[in-house]
Image 1 (cartoon, rainbow, N blue to C red):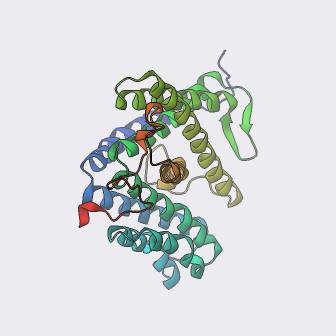
Image 2 (image 1 turned 135 degrees about the vertical axis):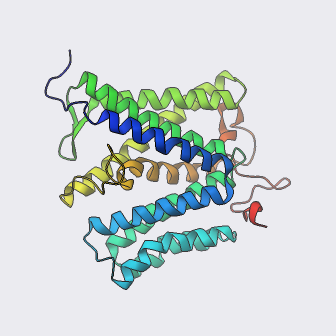
Length: 292
C-alpha cells in the first residue's frame, strides 16, 4: 500500500533531466581522462567550496575565504607533479589557517578530489574504478528514492532527514549491491566469485554513500539550510548532488591503497582497485605517468 503522507513525485522530472545532462558529460571526462577529467574535478571542487563557504555564511570577499575557494586546486597541482603526500598535507593540515569550519570543507572536498585522481590514474583499472563508484552511488540514490516513495514506512533518522525511510535505505543497498555485482563480474570475465565480491563491495559502498548523504543532511539541519545551492534543478546544489560521492571516493581510494600487492583478491574482483605495479613492487604512491 502506498503511504499517502509521503512527499509527491513532482521533483522527479527535474531530477531525471538533470541526470541526463550531468551523467554523459561526467562519463566523457572520466573515459577520456587527462585534462578533461582534471578540469571537471577542478570546476566541481570550486563550486562545492563556494557552497560550503555560503553554508557557514562566510564572506567570499574575505581573503582567507577566497584562498579557501581554490585551495583544493593547489592540492591537485601537487598531485599532477606526483607529490601525493604533500597534496594530502595541503588538504588535511594546512587549511587550519582558514578556521575549523573551512578546514572541514577542505578535508572533505579536497580529500575526495585527490581520491578520485588516485582512482582514475593510479589503479590498474583506471576509469573503471571511477565508473564503478559513480554508478554504485547513483544506484544507491535512485533505488532509495524510488523504493522510499513507493513503500514509505518508518523514517530512518527523522531528526536528521525527515524524508528518508528504512524501506528507501534497504532499497538503496539492494540497488548498490546489484550494480556492483554486475560491474565487477563483467570486468572479471564472468567469474562467479567476482560477482559475489562485487555485490559485497557494492553493498558496503552503498552504506558509505548513505552515511555521506546523512552527514550532509545533518550539517544542513544544524545550519537551518534546506539546500546547499540551487544550481542543479531537482537536486539543489553541487554538494547536495555529490555528498555521497565525497565520502565514497575517499573510502574506496583508501581501500585501494591497503589492498595486498599480490593477486589473492583478484578472483573476488580485487583487481578493480589494485594500484599500478612497477616490476615486482607495488608502491604506496607513484607519479602520474601521463604527466611525465
